[in-house]
Length: 333
Ligand code: SF4
Image (cartoon, rainbow, N blue to C red):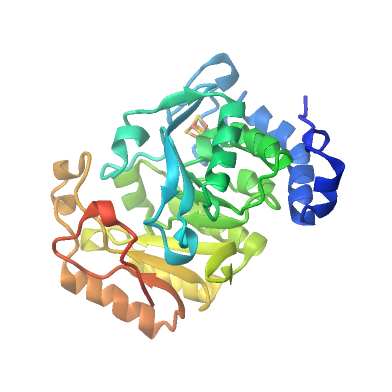
């Protein structure tokens, strides 16, 4: 049955003072949640569409059953400047992942499943705590396999006064239909565009059909929220596309940049990341067992400028890059 969140607001005065967008979000959640929950019975929450009946604790590729698992949460200062802002991005790292990247830098919780089982009200409480800590947004990292639970928790949090933007931070192997359902609920999309060749996507992320689907969801995200909008230097709505450069152009970053320029537009905010290092199982692949070189990096940066892409950030190239500082050293394009 559909949860009713509007009835749970603290008092009428609060509703009057509330920005209409948050009430609209609750209405959208009430409309969307029953369909999202249906997905758990025959899971089609991501493009893999395993069909696992997760209401009966069956697990699909992502190894997520019916429960919610969170690895950690807190203010994160390593995202792009308008996402982190001064007080940090209210980041919630979910355990598990629907992709299978052999070089996963978050493998402890994404692939090995480290994390803690929490309830929907507890997740709602985390969101409210991040807001009261001064975070500028709720940053849902790898939310895809949990999206019905997250949306339900969001409904409760909104009804208790959550009023900061919601950011959806994904590897980009989502279901287009599910992304369409998040229209009017998510404010900021932070998707990866990992590959421009399906052979690479299959080989290194076990993500068949990644490219066309990823491009379709990027178009949909852009349709929903458009280019990044900021208030006082802090993001309030919009799309930032993340491009992790892999060695030997395994990521096909150049092709992806051309796609963005032609189909999403020169004003699109991009975040070009040079932070790749061989993590998890990357050393089993000779081509992935090194960082990107300066000449590979320079080539991509030159292309960003020659394509006239105007907005975003480029992570400087550094031989002694500290993975713990990922994102803190981004410079404007
Ligand atoms: S979210 Fe998980 S179970 Fe559902 S389709 Fe994707 S990989 Fe399969």
